[in-house]
Length: 171
Image (cartoon, rainbow, N blue to C red):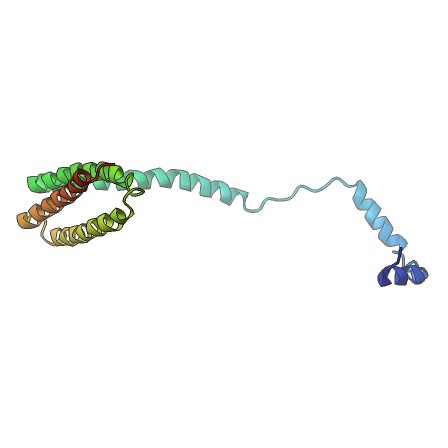
């Protein structure tokens, strides 16, 4: 087998490599360290880690409680402020559930009617953008009855859209 250049160089010059050896003092230091028991490492930041865990374990539930409590407080305020806003909230939940259920039925038919997906999603996205616009108008004037009625009508239009599509297709 052919030797490579490095191996042949090492074999030819081995006597030069073997000339340098560590001093006796170095060997004594190494052997002294071998017999010693390993020193335990000082954990510098272990108390900081423990403190961080304690702070986080106390802070996270507190923040969650505060957020939940403030949301409940705000929704309770809205209920007391205007019963029409409560009606909007209930209508919004009802229509969202109904539309998502019927949309799931329609999505099963996308394989049979692929063009249906772009049409329906385009129409729903258009209604959604109008709804977002109405929602921002409602924030400016919470007791505006016309805005609330328009938002409920928008939800009805979404429902009508998915009902009409389900009526037209037979999947």
